Amino acid sequence: MSDNIPFEMQMEIMKKLPVKSLIHFRSVCKAWNSLINSPDFITQYNGQRTNPQHLFLTYYDCGDKYVSIADDHTFPHHKVPLTFPQWLLDYDYDLIGCSHGLLCLSYYEDQTRIAIIWNILIRKAIAVLVPNVAGGKVYENVLGFGVCRETTDPKIVKITPIRSQSAMERVTWHAEVFTLSTGTWRSPCSSNLPRSSIEFDSYCDQVVTIDGSIYWLAADRADVDGGFRFDYMIISFDFTREEFKEVSLPDSLAHQRYKYILSVLKLKESLVVLEHVNDLAYDVWMMEDGVSKLFTKLFTINVSTGDAKVK
Image 1: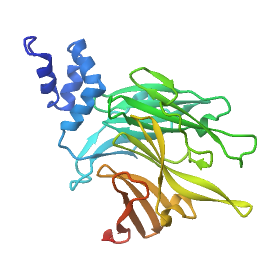
Image 2 (image 1 turned 180 degrees about the vertical axis):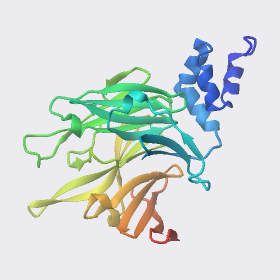
Image 3 (image 1 turned 60 degrees about the horizontal axis):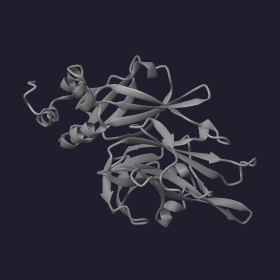
Image 4 (image 1 turned 180 degrees about the horizontal axis):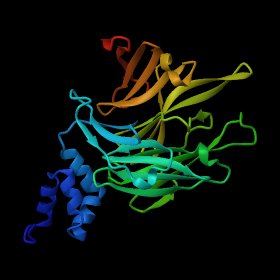
């Protein structure tokens, strides 16, 4: 590409190129490498694509395989094999979240937790050491990942329960935010944290990232008649304001007996709660406009027949 072409025009041309070409072009010059690696370019590149949403799947076939599958009417025929970071293959990892073409994974090495921000587009992965805090346990850290709407900067949020000697007593939450552009952890801009009665499941993948916010399935523990009960709810974290908020669920969802009855998902850039009604049916609830308690039941999925009945 000629040096006489303005860099802004070069950037617009590169936005229309296939992924394989961009990977090769990173080695042309430092300016192109810096551009293609930048969060701004990745966000704009993904925003111009007309391709459908893709699902990240892991399966075993004489060894672990990784593939991206188009989530549309062609499912599961439109597949793109992924080159997984080789040095991660020796670890058991968890998927923390995905946003703007980036995946965040984590694994444990001895008593240390490490997060990985993996750019599938340019096949580049960055390791981030997750610090622990005094009084906290590394295996109880709750992580979330997303991209800030305002700065397009990838961020990881970590919340850690600080427990007293009695495990049954309520906790104090400690929060930190990692920003990729600075490479550092710090306290969030907002001082509000989840209430001490709120509990997360650090071993559960009940979290989803949508439009610059994270949503965790959580529970509010209430003392009742010498015992306690759990009322289920959603805790959100906005990456721009760096602020936690509570999202109430309809009573029929909040007062479930078991936590595994509910799951949080993303559907058309909206938060969805999947309710396991029984072994053959699931109810799908969608939150409208991010307003607390404004959930609408969309339909019921009959697993035995594959039918979906609108409610």
